[in-house]
Amino acid sequence: MPQHEHMERHRKLHGRRMDAAERERKKEARLVHERSAFTQKAHGIRAKLYHQKRFKEKATMRKTISQHNERDNKHASAEAVAEGAVPAYLLDREGVSRAKVLSNTVKQKRQEKAGKWEVPIPKVKPVADDEMFKVQRTGSKKNKAWKRVVTKCTFVGDSFTRKAPKYERFIRPSGLRMKKANVTHPELKTTFQLDILGVKKNPSSSLYTNLGVLTKGTIIEVNVSELGLVTTSGKVAWGKMAQVTNNPELDGCLNAVLLV
Image (cartoon, rainbow, N blue to C red; front, side, top):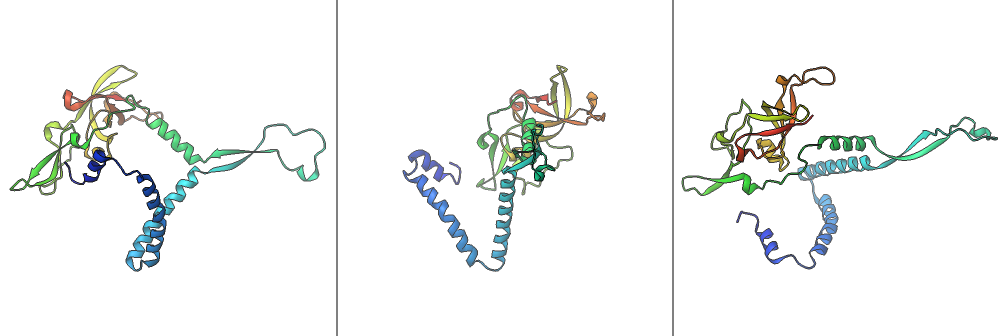
């Protein structure tokens, strides 16, 4: 059993207390008072650091609330002015209608999110850490187990240099490194072998993205300069996104679909 999982294991075997939810609610309610007491007691550099942290938290909270708040929007109504006598104080006013609208930032974020995730494979099965990494035991007596060997295909740049063995935590075997991908253009129905420029997003974890792990559903950037694709402004496109559609560690090659 891995370290730090005794509580999870106990919960799986024996379940939770009957009043677990109530205890959590009370603990959360007490947290406000505990935080207040600590704020009043703390002094010196400890208080300064704590206030900085709280200031950032509150700023983020205010930002989120302001983005999601609806606001009143006034605009001139398109309807014709009613016939008949109009009081003198209303002569210089246009008919105004009010509408509740979401702030532009929220609208923009929603549009970006909707456009961002229109991919050929919208949902993929997440890869667990136990499947992704193999424990590498080190030390003269093999009693240290802090190193991990990546068991999936990875991408590293041309300028990549391994760290010294003393400091390298994640080992990416050179036999599982990929540099090229078989990319299919969905409109041309043609496949090209293109160079990989980088790993943009691995849906399983941000750690896998940083390590450059290539699993099914991963978004990669490929070099499309050979295809002669141009942007709307007429410039030659250098790199475009593609989504991996196979399991590279099983097939021995990387297949992807270009996101156009």
